[in-house]
Every structure is written in structure tokens, then in C-alpha cells.
Amino acid sequence: MKDQFKFVLDNYLIEKRNQFAQNSLANFIRSDLVKDIVKLSRISNNYLVTGSAGQGNWAEIPWVCVFDKDITKSAQHGYYIVYLFNSEMKGIYLSLNQGWTQYEIKFGISNGREEIKKSADIFRSILRSNLYDFSFEPINLNTNNILGIGYELGHIYGVFYPTDNIPDDGILIDDLRNLIGVYREVKGIVGKNVFDLKLVYDLDENDEEVEPTPKEKLEINKKFVDLETEEDINNALAKLELELQNKDPKTRRRMATAIARNKKVSDLIKKKAKYICSICGRIGFVKKNGGLYAEAHHKEELAISLKDIPSNVICVCPTCHRVIHYGNNESYNKRLNLK
Image (cartoon, rainbow, N blue to C red; front, side, top):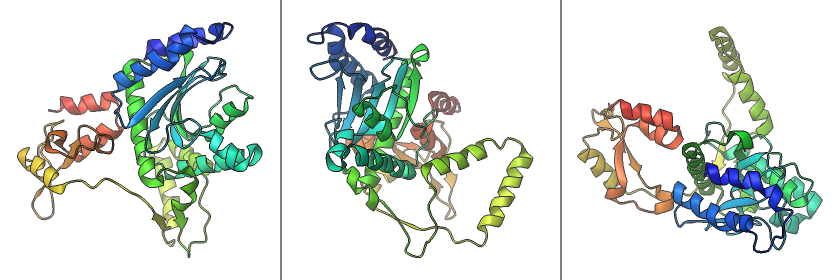
């Protein structure tokens, strides 16, 4: 994937001077690049992957999209994962993004820009997964084009790869598969229609406090990241203790759907493994009732493969289970080395 991305970045601006029809680079983006991403990242048939260098003429911003077929099959509608090439070919964004055209059609250009920004903020507020090196920060595609600005405003969450520092395939693949996990997580909460977002979260009727915006949350998180010394951390915790001790926690109502797991399958797999983790080789902890605790992990993601069958399930400890879903390769290999 690294070499393929570099090939596009190094040649796109040169090829834009040439005829678009039957151009080999445009065909490469639509075909070869897409096939390599699907093959290397082992993307299931539940997803449609397409690439574009333009329709009838060169696009300012070429892209490759990963669509959940239940949500959308078009970059104009729904929400999806997309590789967006900076218009000056300074790098690529891997972005969880939204279709701009649906907002333009429903609200017009000016109001549509406000609505897509609001939707992006709501998406960010419900995301639970924190991926390494990923950010909620705005993206910059160096564009004045209506569609390009739509991509920038519709961006929810992602990571930037500068042209002179494209990571190796292992990182690119992990990032994409992890973002697919986030995509699946959001789908379970939001559903298929971006215009249903306002229904996802409602403040409790008795809660008069205003929820911080994603930008405010980001600033709060940055403050805590900057706390380095033990004294700073203790002071911050003491301050929070005073602020929160007489304050009732905020309540929310959430609409969510999830695939029901077959408890019999997971119980038998854990029993067969004697509650020993398949990754680190350690036995699960003892519960209050004296029984052992471990977790069941689907080797092929259940929401994608729909295979809730014994051959697709392994026994893992809680720590390894979190590492599988949220850790990087180094963290995973460290767990393997414990075996």
C-alpha cells in the first residue's frame, strides 16, 4: 500500500496535465490501488471499496472510499471511510467522513456547511474508541472547491500521512482495520441515516447543563495530557473531587443495536480452553463466586463476518482482548511474548 500511495502522490499532478480519458494513473486509482487495499487489508464483502480520480475530468482531490453497503455505496451520501489525497499531493488523510452532496441537496450550500459541521461534532461526541495517532482535528486539503470544502467539513476522525513519511504497510493496514472497527461501532449507535443523528443522544429532562462541544472536550483532554508530574496530577484530581462530589452525574438515553452473541458458544470455548488465554497463555482471574473469568473473541469480526460459530471464537483474557481491538502491533507482540 505504501508504494501504491507514493506512486499516486508522486505522479498525480504531472498526469493532470495529460488527457483524462484512458489515463493509466486514473485507471490505477480506480482499479489496482483498490484491489491492493482490499487484498492486503482483508476487507470483507460487507464493504464496497471504490476509487476515483474524477468523472469525465481530473478531480482536484482523488479518493478511495470504503463503504459499509448497509449505509451507502456512494461518496455523496451517508458516512464512510475515505483516503483523501491533499490537492497539492502533500499527503493523504485516512478519514471517517460524510457525503457532502446529501447536505447540499437538503439544505443548500451555506446552510449545508453548517449542518455537516454540526453532524461531525455529534459523531465525535459519541465516539468511544481512541486510536493511536488518530485525531479529531480538522483536515486541510488545500482547496477552495465546494466539494473539497465539503470533505473538510464532513471529516469526523482520522490520521494524516505526509508524502515524505508514509508509514509501512503494517501500520497502514492496522490503521484501516482499526478505523473500520470505529465505523462499525458508530453504525451500532447511529444507524444508517446521518439525519437521524439528533436522536442518538438526548439529555435527561432534568439536566439543564450544557454538554461541552467536541472542541471543548479536546481542550480539556489536552490539559490533562500536559499534566506530567505526580504533583500536577494530584492537584488536578483534588480539584475534580471538589467540583464533582456534590454533583449528580449526567444521564443520557442511547439508541443502539448490536448483534447478539451465542452465549453457549462462548461458554464452551472458554471451558475447552480451561479459561487460559490463547494470546498470553495466562489463566483468567477468579470471580467472587469462585469461578474463573475469561472472554471470548471472534477472530473474524462478528459484525462483518456474521460468524458466531465455534471455529471463529477463541478464549482470551480481558487485557489481551483490549489489546486485540485497540492496541498496536508492538503491544500485541508483547502480549504474545508472555506465553
